[in-house]
Image 1: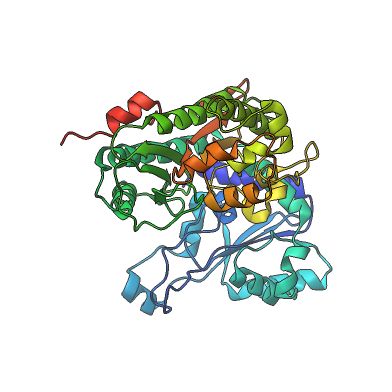
Image 2 (image 1 turned 135 degrees about the vertical axis):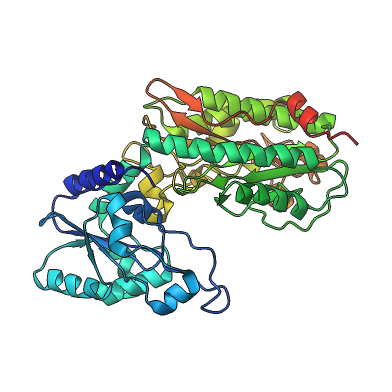
Length: 464
C-alpha cells in the first residue's frame, strides 16, 4: 500500500467535496467459482482500494462527514479461520497503516445506517456493479436492489471521478511498474510466436510472466489470429504462416494499477506487402494522435483527427475514395474503425467506468454522438493534466459488417467495396500505448515495446 498520508489526504479531499452526510463504501466479497470454498482470485473494489488501501474481503467503510469519523467495519478471524489461513493481523492492526483508528464488527454497520436514516441523514453511495453489492445496499438502506443505481449519489460520483481521474506521482509509478512487467510479457511473446503454435501457448506464457513477477493480468488477455473480433478471448487457434497475431494484454501491479498494451505481429516473422501497408497506416494514425494530446483538447477531436489520418491512408491503398474529411464526417471510416480511440486507465483498466461511462468519458463540453463508430467513444471529454489514457487505433476487416454495409450500398460514394472484398480474410491490426497527459503535452508511459515494422520483424523472428 501507499504511505498513510496518501490515504488520509484522499479521504480528506473527498469529505471536503461532499460536505455533509455519510459516505458508504462496500468492499468486494469473495465469489465462488463452483462451490463456496473454491473462490475466484479476490480483487478488491477499486474505490475501496483508493480510499482505504485494504485488499481483503469482508470489509466495509463509512466516512461520517458531519462527525468527522472514518470507520472500517469487518470481523477478526476466529480459530477456524486461523487453522486454514494461519495467524492474521487484527482489523485494527491492518487499518493503522492507512490512517484509520476506528474499527467496528461488521454487524454494527447496519445499526449505524439505521440510526442515520432515522435521523434523515443522507447516505451517499456509488452505483453497484455487482449483484451482491446491490442486495447488500438493499439490506442496509432499504432500497430495492433493482433501484440502487437510481439512488446512487450524483455528488459522490462527480467527486470520486474528479479525484481519481487525475493520477498522482505515486500512481504513475505503479502504472509504469505494471508496464515494465507488460514489456517483458510482450518481449517473450514476440520471440516465441511462430507457425504451428497455439494461441494459448502465447497467452499462457504472457500470464506466466506476470505471475512470476508478483502481478496478475489486469483483464482477460486477447491473443488471437482473428483480430477482426475486437474482444476475442478464445485462444484455441493454431497459428499459420500468413496470420497476423493481435495481442491486447497488460498486467496489474500488486497495488492494483493496470497496464494496457496492444501489438500486432506477423506469425511468420515478416509482414506481407499488404499487411505492411495496413500496419503502417495504423502506426501513423497512432503517432499523430499521440502528438495531438495535451491539456484542454477534447479527446473526441483527437479521435476525429486519427480518423481523418486513417481515411487518407485507406484512400491511398484504394479502400476508400473521395474526400477523406468528408468520408469521416459521414462515418465511412467506421467500417474499418468501429470503436473509440481509447479510454482512461488507472486502478481499473477502463478507469472508473463502473460508475457509468458517461460520467467518466464525457462532460459539459461534449455529448455522445449517435453515429456508428463515433457513438462507441468511451472518452470524449477535455483532457486534463494527470489523466492516463490509452491510444489504440485499429483497422479491422469484419466480414459480417462488410456484408451488411455492402448489401445496403451504404456510403458507396466513399467505400470501394470490390477492393474491400479482397480483404475479407485479412483479420485486424491494433496498436496501443498508455499516455500521461502532462502540464504541457503528453508522455508515453513505460519502456518502449517494439512497434516499428523493422523492430517487430527483428524481434518476432526467433533464430531456428
